[in-house]
Length: 82
View (cartoon, rainbow, N blue to C red):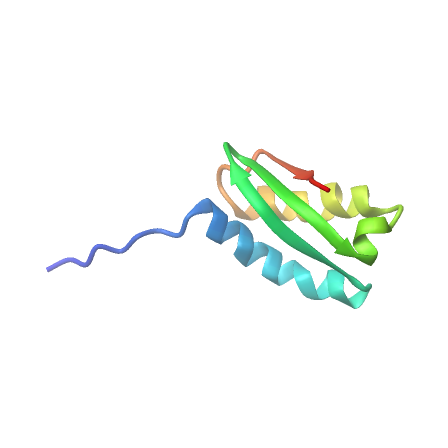
């Protein structure tokens, strides 16, 4: 008898990756909140020090987006929402 095992959703997979990155953001006084995942677009809100940091775009694109593209199949882009 086989079990019906549901694979994690893209939303869950994105959350898992963000949880791995979160300690690095928190170390610098920031954090990230997952707002939505729709059609391969991940919408994030940078909070704390990350929200007002001049390097937040680099953090978002070079750090978070790169990790999500590598680890979550179907992610196409990460955008910041305010």
